Amino acid sequence: MLFLNPLSTDAQKIAALANYLGMGSPAETWYQDQIVNQVTMWADVTQEFNARWPPIESARQMSEEYQMELLEHRLLEEEIGIIKTVRRQKVWTHIKWEEEAMELVRLTGIEKGSTLIWQVKKQLPKAIHRLLDDEYMTWDKFTKAVKELNMSKLKQEREEIEERKKQDEECDQKLLQRVEAAKRAMVADLMAQLQRLTIGQVAVPRSAPERAPHPRNPPPTQFTLQQGPRHTTTVLEMFPHQQPDKEGQKAYLAQLAVWTAKHGNVTRIMEHMLYPLKPGTVAICSGECFCCGTHGHGSCDCPTVEGDMSRLSHNEIAWRALCNRVLGLINRNNALNVRLVALDEQGNKVGSL
Ligand SMILES: [Zn+2]
Image 1 (cartoon, rainbow, N blue to C red):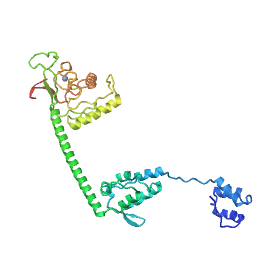
Image 2: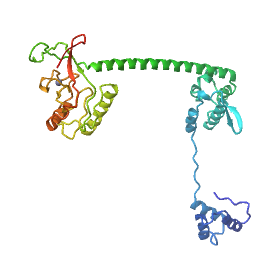
Image 3: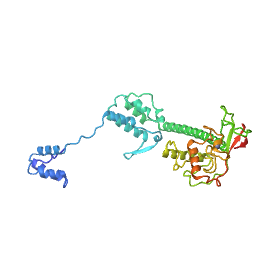
Image 4: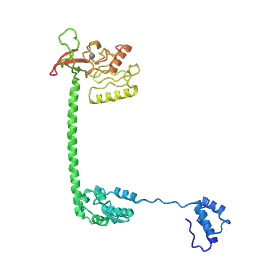
């Protein structure tokens, strides 16, 4: 809006207007082109000016928006008993909170009644909440009660709350330690089992000269991998052959995920699809059984059956067979001998294959 009332005549006002316009600004151009020597009435100039630059409506918040702001106006537990500076004046944080809340209440226009009091009160920290009455009928009474809170009582409440929080944290910490210890024990147990790599549900005739076919309900004969140190890594292995320990198993699963992401569910393994080898098994092309990845028997005589823990995946079986066919026994001399060992029901070694 344009006001130059203190000047007495319209001509003076129009002449003085030039002093208020920025040098080279669009307003100055407008003034030179359309006002000077063309418009003589100040009323016409203001009309022209306001038509060219209409006043901008400033944003006004609605009562609902102030209500939302009031509900979001929080005082945190850790702020209680702290002094803050407001307009160069040092005040307790809960007093500052009260002043700001009251200002929002006035802007909302609800200061006369009890609207939103319980909602706002509920959001206050427990230490304050406990020192207040159950109900307040007006905002004045409620904010006055906050303002007049007994500081020593407030500090005591806060200390008690902090003490309880500390106790809870200690309790959580102890629980966490117990869970970690249980986890470690479980991993150690798994590691011990991995050392034996037990497979169940496989029948092996220990005395018969030839292998009998698998019975329908095989007795619970068990097998384990008897393993030496890790074999030499060959250039064929894009995925390093992992150790049969916890870290190795983890790395192997990651390798499988990478392989699956790259090749998906393929129906046929090809030469370029370098496949990760199961930890604890022998090197490829070392005269191994493709089905279980150990030495001492051929793939056709493998005692493991589909579903056994020691049975390799279809992809790994196919990969080992493919490598053997294409490259021959290139690792025969540098792979360590690993055999499948039969265990009796007590887990004692009774024979190897
Ligand atoms: Zn086998």
